[in-house]
Structure formats: C-alpha cells, structure tokens
Image (cartoon, rainbow, N blue to C red; front, side):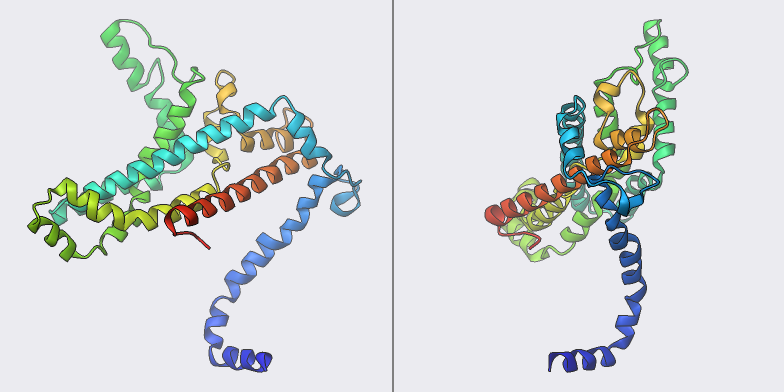
Length: 307
C-alpha cells in the first residue's frame, strides 16, 4: 500500500524529483562513494595493495597520533584558533546587524552593507597577500609609518609566533563580518514594528529597544548558527593557515589540517596516507561529538535546537 502511494506521489510530482536528481547524484558520487576510502585510516596503505588489499591495522594509526608529540600542540592550536574565530565571528556580525538595523536612512544602509560585504569575495590568497604587503616591516605601510615615527625598523609581525592567531582571526572578521551579518539583518527585518512602537510609548530608549525587542527575537537564530558552527569548530581552514605559516610561527600555526597535509601530501616527509587519513577522521569524529553536545546543550538551555 505504501509502495503504491509512493509511486502515485512520484508520478504526480515527477518534475520535482527530476529537479533534485542532479544534486542527489552529485552527493552520491562525490560525497558518499569516496567514504569507502576512509578505511585506509585502519590499514597500512600501500599503492601496490590499494585500498582493499593493504594490511588491516585497526586503530593503530589513531593511537599513534594520540601518542605523538605533535598531538597536544596541533589539537590545542586548532581548538584555540577555532574558538577565538568563532566568538569574534558571532559577536561582531551580531553587533553590526543590530547597529545597521537601527539606521533609518535607506540609502546609507545600502551603501554601508555593500562596502562591508565586498571583502567576503576576496580570495584567501589575495587576502594573505594584502596582509603581507601592508604589514611588511620594511616596505609595507606598517613598516614605513613605524620607521618615519620612531626612526627605526619595526619588529616583524609575521615573525612573531603569538601574533599569528590575532592576524588570522581578525583578518577573517574584516573579510566576513558583513556577509555573516546578512542572516541577522534578514531576521531583524521580521520584527513586528508594533513592538517598537509600544516600547517607545513606554519611554524605552533605542538601546533598551535593541536589548528587549531585537535581541530576544534573534536568540533562536543565534542558537541555531552557534550549534551549526560547533559542528566545524575543529575544521579551521587549511589554505589561509598554510599561506600564513613560516618556520618562526609554526609553534602556533601548525593546525590539524596543515599537519595532515604535511604527513599525507607534502614532499618534505615520506607520505603516510593511512596516518594522515586517520588524523583527519579523528578530527571529523571530534567535530561530530561537539555538534551533538552543542545541540543537546541548546535544547536544554533554550528549547531551540537542530533536532
């Protein structure tokens, strides 16, 4: 009976099912089928043996990573940088959206949103290049201004290991806060104008209306975005971190993603595909656990969750 009903529904709405056929095929071919290759994390992979015939070693590669001297450093660096960036990229877009919503001049709002959104479309390679040019201690704007003021060359910011985290996080804020604020701005557009009018009649200031009207309306959106963000909290972008790395800041810039690259693909060491896959799989499982914990906490504290 259910099969007959399903056939009727498909026959009736065949255009919709045809529409999703290509995206579905994309996910099956490029997302689900490649997951069979994850088994090399549990094998001693060799090109001759291939994925299916290499010796099975179980959790040996995962245990090797946990016992590695690099484990504490790369996990700590990844976690700290992720949380740092997550907090900044939540608070600043939220604050901008609240301020933007308070502006009453439509033309000024359009110009402002366009200006703050444009950096999002700059590629990571170009962004890192801009940073290196501006902050160069010899020929960059930073170096020239410092030399003219103090009469000597400034310290090299890219050579300061502790500066890496701040450069990485705040450059991401500059590039993405306008884009990240769009969803908050869209949510605020749905606030009932009558609530603001009633608050004004009660003598509420603009700041009080933001606190008691706008912010409570945004809480479900904030919670959902925070939970979704926790699902990738340990997945710091590889490209930007790798481009900003050098031998001087490696203590703070070596992340799980860059370490996986060095182990699995970099020519600087003997490539170990099984070990690199095991590290990446460990990271993915950790993200999944954090996502479930964040969703559980959100459901208990705010009654808003992904599921």
